[in-house]
Image 1 (cartoon, rainbow, N blue to C red):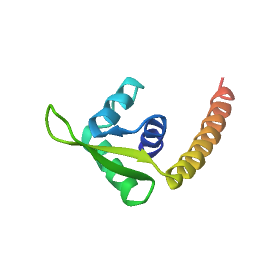
Image 2 (image 1 turned 180 degrees about the vertical axis):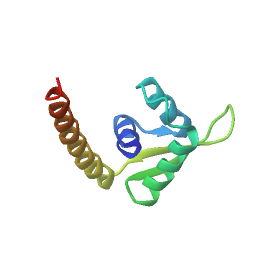
Image 3 (image 1 turned 30 degrees about the vertical axis):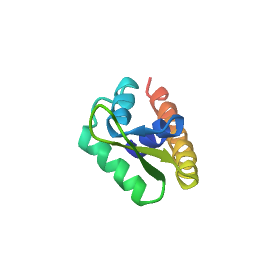
Image 4 (image 1 turned 45 degrees about the horizontal axis):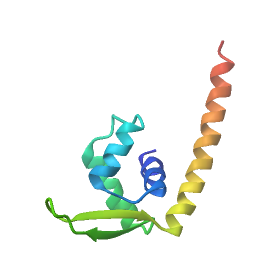
Length: 98
């Protein structure tokens, strides 16, 4: 699920690690720690779903930004469809429990 959330956030706009964490939290995902998000970014990058580039900063260390690749877009599309199917199935099951 974290892969899907990270891909969705980066698909909207490139971001550096803490920026991605902040956007996930503002979207309601408070349970995943910073280390999990950073690890997910590194793994998605290693698997070709993300690209990265460094932007110099006048106020501190340079920031490594991540952007989505065509591979990442395809993965996001597939995982989004799988999630929607799962959520729909679960909703149907839960409604039947009334």
